[in-house]
Image 1: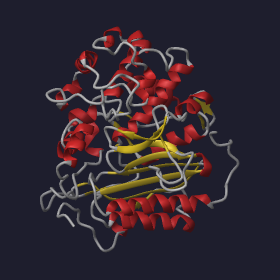
Image 2: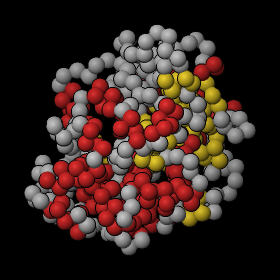
Image 3: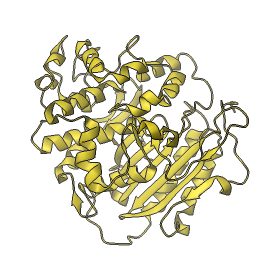
Length: 417
């Protein structure tokens, strides 16, 4: 085991906080047992899990430390417990939220998913990108998966117009629409700029005005208030160093080396800016509630914010376990969300209709219509590979097994088709 691990006490009760309304039932305790085994790998400083089933929270619990127990923290560093109220950066899981906003704009008639990007950002047509569509952006087929050096510095994230200009000037690596290659950061800026040009608002304001405000969310937006950054869980590079040549694949996917990506994620400039593909900050409870909204066809607590077709369009399959040339993995995509399957699924086994998105690197946000389940598993450890992968899979498998057999507590609308 690498020395880049966190201190794990024998007794975990002192570092566990439960906020499940009325307390968690004994039937879900096998899920938490799997989470504690995941934590005992020593590669996750903090884990927060919230599960909603049939419209009710069945588990809302956190374990570990939001700060002060990372492998690079000096001895004696004050430790701050992670609780279900601790916000995490959810990284690429932000993409699913951004995608839903684009589908919402489509339903309002302000854009159409198959429109060319250049219809809204004329200068984007440069260097052979005139036929690139919004669909290409949502499905990672736009041909501009990354901006390499020297344009991948965090300082650029502070200057929205500069990033948009660089993307407009970029030459596609492949013909738009032809190849599947994960766009870690780039696509989000293009989509966010479309939002700005058609609504006159930043994507942050648009998300708040159209979704978060009407539903009474306290957080879950792009970035976090600068004066409250001390509340956000600190991310840590844990586990072994990424070996060559895998490090080249990682750097191509993230635009920067692994350790640099972790460091950037803790940078106040990153955490307080707007990065539509990668910096929504939220609690697990808020993320699970958002996916409950999607399970209910765009309506939550009597308030409708999305048309039913918004979610149907987002989960429409665009690729079936096709090899992603950036991730070098087979992935099943919808239009801006990742899709599950019976076996090869980011949401665990037997999840053919599940949808959601992963975040760097073991953050999982999803909805499973077959179980009427909405969940968020948020983590602050960033190991590239280790024994935690098997432990994480067991967490997901246990969630699916336990929730598959749980009876409905209340009547709810039919799940997303």
